[in-house]
Structures are given as C-alpha cells and as structure tokens.
Length: 105
Image (cartoon, rainbow, N blue to C red):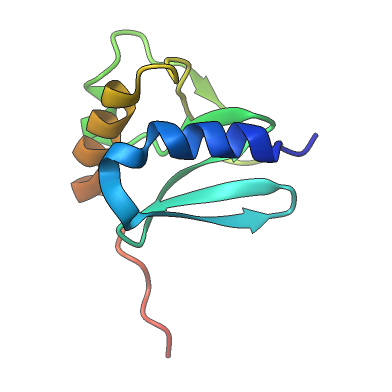
C-alpha cells in the first residue's frame, strides 16, 4: 500500500520547526525524508519510520522496530507523531549519527 500525500503533509507540518532544511523524495509510492541533506527515515505505508541510530534510541524506553518493506532492515516506528516538539528534537539529536550523502563522481 502506498503512503498518502495527506500523511506526508502532516509529517512535514510537524517538522516545520526544523526550518527549510527538511526535504523528501518520492520513491515507489513511499517517501524518503532528509534533514540537511542526510537521509533520516521515511514514510512507508503511512508509518513514520526513522533510522535506528544511537542518539534516537535514547528517546525511547522500549523502541518499536518495523521493516519498511519485506527484506529491509528494521527501522524505528515513531508512533508519537502528534508532538511536533518531540519529533523535531528527535531528528536534531539523530542528525550527527546519520551518514553524510555520498559524493557523485
């Protein structure tokens, strides 16, 4: 099942506190999410999933892992999407641990 534009719009609105540095790419009906050019997660089947980097794990007592699609590595399922301040803090904390984009040759 593909993710809806409405769900993407909601998540982007929640992340407005991060400024203009949030971007996304549509990929096979789902959305990859970037902060300052670094991939931090995505929207898969109307679920907000985040890369399970150590600083992000510190925000959760019992993290919930889900696979974005069959065969993929599990990611953190972020269920607390109504709290915009929490989401922005989570992404800011995760940012230093995210991989920098690869340089094109």
